[in-house]
Amino acid sequence: MPLTLSQIAANRATVTVDFAGETIHLEYAPSLVTEKTIAEAIALQDAVERSMGDAKQVDPDTMTEEEGRQNIRSFADTMAEVNTFLCRAILAWDVYEDAEMTRQFPLTPERICELPIEFRAKCFRALQSGWRLGEANGTRSSRRSRTSSTTATPSGSNR
Image (cartoon, rainbow, N blue to C red; front, side):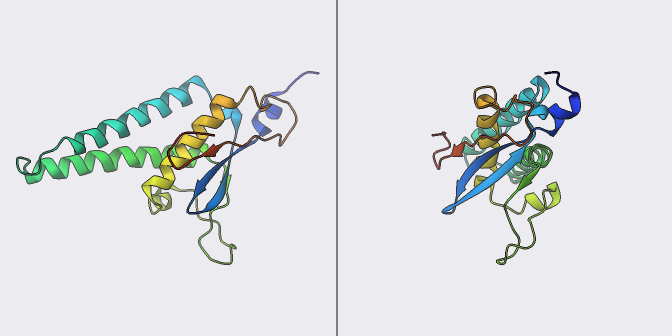
């Protein structure tokens, strides 16, 4: 059966993130996963690891105040890029602002930065796991809403 570009674009997949004793579902479009997207994700991951590594190697006794501010700015700039990436990659999620779960937490760079870095890192890793598993779990199907699930564990590896 032929496949149209709109069918490819309409396909959705889901990954899960375990955080604070809850399971969060992230919906994304496998059609957005391209070599460019993967290269961007790898570059962001490398930048975060580099900036965190730089911070760990700093000797507070010899670092100037300006060097400390520069390290913080560098990390903040990298996280701003990660936030923008997450907001583009995640189409929907079940994170809410209120206890009644009536107002979904907005997927905007201005708001997502309010969430813990650990949570955002788990979301990032879960998306990457979903991308790696895409072909094996049926997301290439032309059927709409066929989904898969991947769990990001507290250690950051996947089950």
